[in-house]
Length: 113
Length: 463
Image (cartoon, rainbow over all chains, first blue to last red; front, side, top):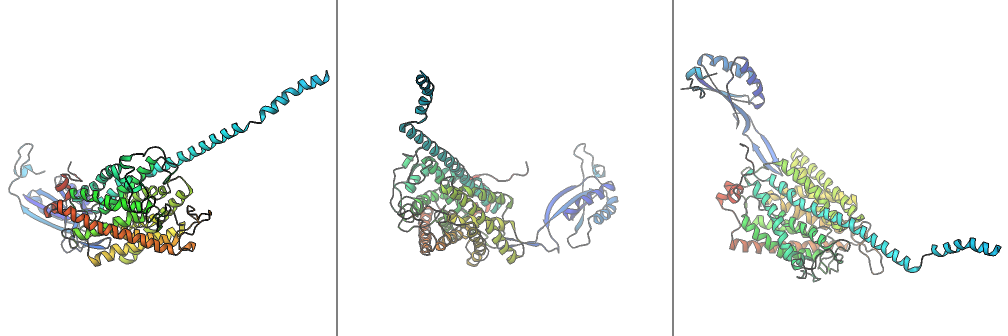
């Protein structure tokens, strides 16, 4: 099992969710984060005081998938999240040691959706 | 027989002719009743307007100023900031009732009132002919109270995010006694040194409080900002307004409420009230445009914060002028205030580096001074016919009336308010610091005053 962590543009979330659902991936965790890679931020001015805002709003999607499906999920996710411009985001893949469905104690890949 | 028949026929006519002419006593009594009814109707109209005005001015403090200031601070200090405005609504009310009204409006000495109205003695439904002859004195008293409440609340903008609540309570109590009541008496009280219409030696035109409210609070704010020093992390750390939405709402409440502040200062539902209403509105509008334009040219984008700051600056500047100037000079005064206060806040403050957190000095101190001086220029008896010489002829008011020395009087009024507010605030701060300590600790400031001083959080989104 692998954990896929994708940091994407917030306005791409709906497209990514739809694309993942179409290949049968239902379970995910989403949170709002702030960050940047090479993307420049913007300047805000309040009563003459300038502020450089370089931590930009992003969305982080976390999903755990069966190893066999990882490549397909990565391709689908990246394609849906891509605009081609700086700021599109990144995807990371981690090894997962165990997964448990709380409701009925299913373990391993059985616990995944 | 024909004569008696004619006499009988004519009798009703003769009788009717006699009852058609009432006697003098009846006419006199009918006229007296009519006069009383007219006076009563005028009083009803005046009192209705003045009670509404009083409510409008209180609304300016709560929630107007509370929201305006609250939205400009960081989230961790939103409640503490609102609490400062709110508690003054309560605290100043009590001080006013016990001794404040009397010290401001009792007696006729030049500097401070006496105690004839202490504990609101003699303040009932009968009018006080010295101040507002057509409304109950209670109405006049409560209207003035709302001014006494908002003036100290304005100062809070300077020491936002770092003042101890307990010290603020002591500070404001002393400030009301030492600065506000004397200043109010000098400008608006009978016999006050700067009174324009009640026998002042140096008549200063201040219709609704440019000197009494804005200069005193603005200058005191500057002193506080300098004494308490900068917030931790200022100016390097980001201290953006955490909620401009509520600041916007607060500013609009201030604009609307200001009609009570300025037009209500006519103390009657009169033509002068209409004139002041119009001047107020025009001043706000022009100032918003002035600030927005200045900011657009300077920074490249017009901002909401700029717009609302501008309208407040205009309202401040038009305050002393509102019952004295025509509509187009009001536009000019407003526009000047918008541009000047923008420069104060965006350039001068950063140049000198003091932390007047919410620009109480830049907007109220400078805006009030500008407005007071421009009043000396644009005041005209074409708007305000309340000043006559012993023969009943209208006196010239400002420069436009051919009375340029009025500007000198305005300068004196400004100087006195600057001096009183400045010096007294230093003394009061030292007293408060000696006995209580005015600044919150580093830990309290970092945690945020809402939690550290009040045990509360403004926004709890999880539930």
